[in-house]
Amino acid sequence: MELDFPYGKTEITVEEYEGQIDAEEIADHLAEGTTGDPAPRVESFIYTMPQFLDWLDSSGRDYPWRHTTDPWRVYATEILLQRTRADAVANIYEGFFDRFPSPNALMKSNDEMIYTQIKSLGFGNQRTRSLKEAAELCVTQYDGTVPADLDALQQPWRVGPYSARACLLFAFNQPISLVDSNIARIIERVFGYQMPNQPHKKDSVYELVDTLIPDTPELARSITFAFLDLGALICTEPHPKCNECPLNSCCLFTEPL
DNA sequence: TTCCAGAGAA
DNA sequence: TTCTCGGGAA
Image (cartoon, rainbow, N blue to C red; front, side, top):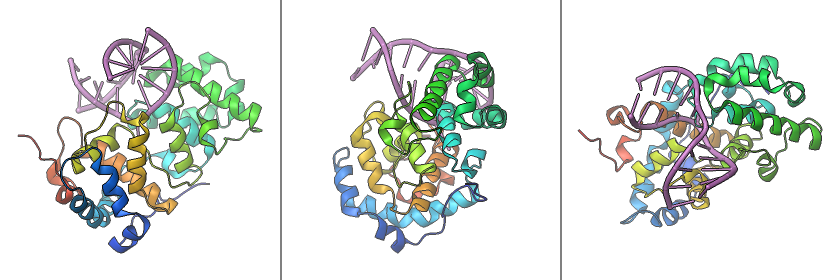
């Protein structure tokens, strides 16, 4: 399905968000990695959600893959996005799906053709193998379609929890959380949460972020984009722009001089 | 130099 | 738990 608006739903009231999450559950999960009482921070975060989605609406990034729920495009794009700047993927997106519009088209292609399309992203050989295995999975086991199943999606080499969950969220409209370096950094800073190494492969972190994600797929989608874009544009690793941040009022992190 | 919509191997 | 893959942009 094609979408004219990239984000999902960006208008929300505090009451609406409050009704779709469990503040106590959030605080319980936060307590495992923070000191002090997390409850007030959770309340502050909930009250900031409307302006967070306002910020997404006015300042979020727009990418072609945010305008489709076609499972093959979403699945393949997630493989292209691993440890890679989204702008780099945007540059090759059109050419890639022009040549590989379906799992069957990619499976029939030779490795060099695939490699040529994606080499500017890095990880060329790894990603070629991932893409071929992903296409083969769809063609040989699911009649050319992408399976809407967390375990099945992770069968191809180098397709892990992040990519599989992103596919469920963006292609199959399941309200499921993502954990990438951006989201982990924001949670760490906003709540003062002590992140483990490689947070995107820790079940405990997914469980925590899951508590922040609303039940409505449209809101789950927009809040996830809000986190991703905030991490890329404002809450950056070296020089966060806290004075421009929509979460500034509920964030424990203070910008170093 | 560092870091990026991570994941597998050591 | 740590190391490594990688080209490209800041």
